[in-house]
Structure formats: structure tokens, C-alpha cells
Amino acid sequence: MEKVKVPEQSPEERAKNFKEVCLGYSEEDAKKEACRCLNCKVPNCRKGCPVSINIPGFIAEIKEGNYEKAYQIISEDSNLPAVCGRVCPQETQCEGKCIKGMMGDAISIGKLERFVADYAREHNLNVDTEIKKNGIKIAVVGSGPAGLTCAGDLAKMGYDVTIFEALHKAGGVLTYGIPEFRLPKDTVVNNEVEKIKKLGVKFEYNVIVGKTITIDQLIKDEGFRAIFIGSGAGNPKFMGIPGENLNNVFSANEFLTRVNLMKASSDEYDTPVSIGKKVAVVGGGNVAMDAARTSLRLGAETTIIYRRSLEELPARKEEVHHAEEEGVKFELLTNPIKINSDENGNVTSITCVKMELGEPDESGRRSPIEVKGSEFDLDVDMVIMSLGTSQIDVIAKNTPGLETNKWKCIIVDDVTGQTSRKEIFAGGDVTSGASTVILAMEAGKKAAKGIDEYIKTSNN
Image (tube, rainbow, N blue to C red; front, side):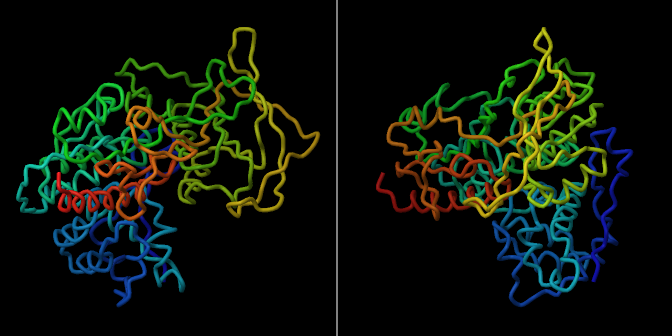
């Protein structure tokens, strides 16, 4: 009933490098794990997958050693299988619905998906897709998981798709937000982007839609019949406590972008990033784990400060487990109230208070309550704030008639992704706030279908 374990780097070894932690299944182990699948007639696992991959179908092909067929099956529903196999929260989605999980260990669906995608890349497998071009131009704003998914699906339908990316490299959060040791860029992300390009999708870099060019200019001057906005949520949140403007206080976004996209961890790149000897990371989500594990690899003694208990940590259990193994410390039921400095404005410590859990809040999570008289200082010389992100509303502000809610998220139809302007669609974090890669992909798929239906029924 136990799953076949996937080999990993030892904690002592991986804490000192940026190589991938999980080493992936061998063919033999992948087949063994696939043979645990019951091939249910009613596959709840597929219902738990936001992009509805035929999970029993591709696992059945792994059993038989038909890896190319398995890859074809996955590719029918997912444009980014090597990414999903690494970073999706399978434990709460497909694997969380697995019948085997009721009796023992759920099937390692994510690791099997990764195995198939990696096999396809290593053996140069391509899915033959006959595309009949229709010549209709569609613009996609942002090359993150939502944009790549939407663009790939539209290209398969025959549309002439161009992605406009604000940065100099494609991938969005896959490139700048997720560390190399979880998601390798050269082998995995770049390969997934290249697959989208092979479908005929064009990329325009260093274009900030809303500033460099507006949505209406794309429509009126460039001839795009519809637009998909998948620009994400890149505006970091802060606590508003004293000292957040001191030297060596970063947002997790800036810190991870410098290390990932700008390669600040490499001596070969002149990208300055200040790494303290003792680093505090404030927050408990996946991004906080990424920031903490990154600073640890750069040589810092790293502590995560989180105001709730271990049970309430929102990060994936696998990431928390890996962080603990590698030596990241946890100050739980703790909340910062002030960052302290020396006369030069350099961080010297962070003042915190202890918390206790009270009644559940609106989301069902127990609300943290400050314990009076519990103040203490934690000696640190660098602080990374990882408190989530919000929308940068430059597009909405410069697009007349595009409606947003009180959180500045673009309002869309839940089924089609269509906005208040019929020719504009949106999806991912720009509509929901910070979320997961796979949910962004789901939004991109919905919008692609919505755009196709709009074009076919439009009188324009």
C-alpha cells in the first residue's frame, strides 16, 4: 500500500547547492508506482485536477512502458506537464482524491507526470499537432502559467497568437518566482516555453502593456481581435510596521527575482543581492519557504516567523518538510511588530510578540491573538517579507470600461474568463489574487475556450 519513494539529494548536500532536490523516478520505479493504480472506472483523481488530465489513461501507458503515448495523453490537457509535475499541490488535488489514499498512500500522480514529461524532453518527443491556421490575431499579456496555457490552446485552435511580456525572459513566476532547486529553468521552464513557440506563438519582450502600449492600441492599431490578460499579481504586501524601509529589508518577490531571473547567486553575474548572516523570513506560504530555503543556500542562518502554528502553515507539507530537513528554523505563533537598526540604518534585530490561537476567522482559520507582555528581540541582519501580493493595476487604469473589484482584481465570468469588455478576457492571479500555478493554468484554458467561442459568434 506504500508508494514507491522518489530519490532526493540528502539534506546536508542540497542545503549547499541549487540543484533540484527531487531526483525523479527511474523507469523501473515509475512502472512499479504506476502498477499501484487501480484504474478506477470513476476516476476521482481526474475530477481533482484543475485542467482535467486523463490521469488513469497516462498511468496505464506507463505500466506498459508506452511513455510516448502517456505523454500524448497528458499533452491533450496540459501545456506544462514538467512544471505541474514539480510544483502542483497534488496532495490537495488529484492525489487528495485518489482512492488508494483512503487505504494507504495515494498514487504519486505528480511524480509520474514529471517522469513522463522529463522522458519526453530527454528523448526529444513531440506531440504531432495538425494546426489549420485561421489568420485571426489574438494577444496574450503575460507569459506566466495562465498566459502560456491560454496561448498554447489558442495556437492549437489555429489562432495567430502573440504574447507580450514585461520582462526580458518568458515564464513569469515560473522563471522569477520559483527557485532553481524546485523548478530548473534551463532544462524545464525554457523547454516548456520552446514547446509553445513551436506551436507558432510569437513572443514580444520588454513590453509593459498599459504603459508601453495600451490594450486599445493593440486592438485598434495592431488588429488583435481579442486580448487575454494574464499579467499576475506582482505587487508585494508589507505589514506597515516600523523599520520596513531599512537597509536589508526585502520583499520575497524582489529577493527571489534577483536570485532566479537575474542569477544573483552566481559569481558569474554582477547582480548585487545582500545576504545577511542571520535572516528572518516573515510568512508561512510556499513563497516564504522558497525565500527561506534560498537564503539558507546562500549561507545564512534562516528563521521563518509565522503567527500561527505548524498545523496552520499554508505552504505545502513537502516544502515545509524539506525546509526543516535543510536546517531552516521556525518561530511559530510569533508576529513581528518592529524592525530595529543601527545608526546607519542597517537591520540589527526584529522585535516580535508571541501569539495564541483564538476563534476561527471568516476563512475558518483560527485567529491569532497577541499574548500581552511577550515581546522579545530576535537577532537578525536581514528581513524578507513574504506576505502575499496584490495587483499592479496599470492595465485596468489605462483600459476604459474594464471593471475591477475592491481588491483591484479584474472581474471576469467564471466560465469563460470574459471581462466587462467583451473582447477582453483575463485569468490567473490578476483576477483572483495570488494563487497556484495550476489554477492559473485552469483559468488560461477556460479563457482560450471563451475567446474561441467569442470569435466564432462575433459579428466583428
